[in-house]
Length: 384
Ligand code: SF4
Ligand code: FES
Image (cartoon, rainbow, N blue to C red):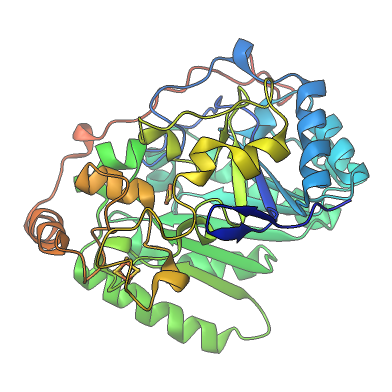
């Protein structure tokens, strides 16, 4: 049963549509833009199989329709098949977001039999040497291509995901062509977003203005050429935008993340906002957290907004932008997103970041990456 919208403060809070389950932070890759937090949860802190299934049950009762099984690398969980089966039986649409590492042909077959609806498979580029260099995993790119073949053979719909940055932005046309070749129905090309690890490596990853302009043009051309063949989703570079995007569809409006140890977050980077306290599914029901949790209500409505957001016509479109970006760039999560042209801090973004990017290049050895703390066994599961 779906719970109705509830009144929280000034606005009615709709029920959530999506839940992203970060099943684990374990991952055999070490991408310099990893969305894991800087402090990783250990395997012994992760929710158990039954705790995850109970969380899925509460999510479905709350109104969640889409369950994204993510990580870290979700295939690192030995119970991935059981978790998928349980989610499917609860009527959730299941989407596995994976690097492909840790999937075998047999495991793909079991996921298909479990009813998995969709897979988003990430790549780091189209050229094996540079893609493997970015992920820190020799042979990783070739493995991903094998996984794509197994998914196609199993009939599981595929989206190819690629994070684009200064070092692979010139490969966008090839990435789109590869998606067609692999039989994907959709490709998601997201320019790197600067939180956590990506922020540490910002100068090495920030695309130039010229790269961004070319990428936008290529995407427009390829969209026209591949209409009806491939859906191309493109997330442009935040720092070159005129206005910020409606991050997460607005704070606490459309979905939430659950961390490996059960903390419930309005977005994946919310823990960078240090004054917020996050409830845990081990201690409080999900419905209470969504409607009444302090962190979720911190930036709902417009009561928290400063000017120029509060009187801006776009406040119901972008909701003041990204709170974590405001935290990262302005040191104040309540500030107008500094990438907005109306923000008094926009000129600092231009000067400190974009101007700098145009003149600087960074040695690869300067890049910081999360160390992969786990290695795979031959059967596709992780040693922990
Ligand atoms: Fe969005 Fe605020 Fe900028 Fe208006 S001023 S466009 S609401 S970030
Ligand atoms: Fe947290 Fe945008 S990543 S609000």
